[in-house]
Image (cartoon, rainbow, N blue to C red; front, side, top):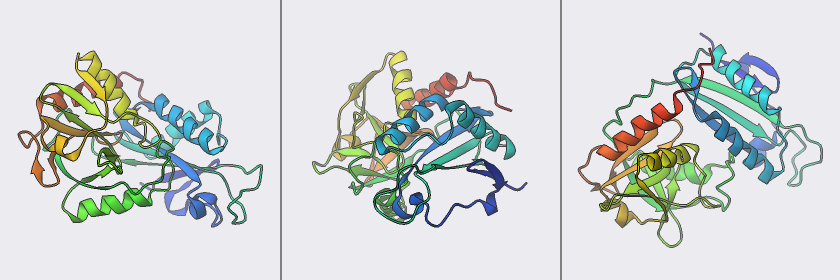
Length: 286
């Protein structure tokens, strides 16, 4: 079945979807995006994702491309058109199209693009876990804005894959972990504390991160927001990462050293299962 995309009010064949060469998203990364997971024909954490989109747009002074109800409708239409029961929907908003200049003209019309694709259904089982490496954080200083300017993250993700790891945990100038290139980073201490870096300009306020923190507190787990080091992660009882498209994923090796038992731990497994239950009560959209 041909894939369908949405480009500024039109539903088009994915292969034909395009915007202008002078779109500021293309030339300046003057654009923001969101990725919303779909499971069982349900959009997971949809409203918090749209809230974060609003934050990103506001911080850059870009207007909403559609009013929120219309945007929610368009997300569902693209997912329906692509018959996505499990997968993701991607939306991107650029400032608009204009003659190339650092200072954009007033009154630009934002450009909205939406795509969707299928992926395997998420399971409650956390899987065998992944390895991560560490590297200096190369990104700009407003990571809380979910911009399409992802070169620093892409460089570090490539380093990880070249080293045989799935993710790179990035380090600030003091040697503390900020987050992964496309995930938030967590450890569980031997004292039973769940540690993750506090939100601010230096990390993205992960939507899955926030829901997992809420679920953890409901399970009477102690969540502590503070920076941690690679040495702490290597010596942790468990480690994991959170992201929209893979939920809660165990981290079993950090810079070549085994974490804990070297397999998914009980707490990670429980958090993953409880997260899926917590977000699975919305109505299917098709």
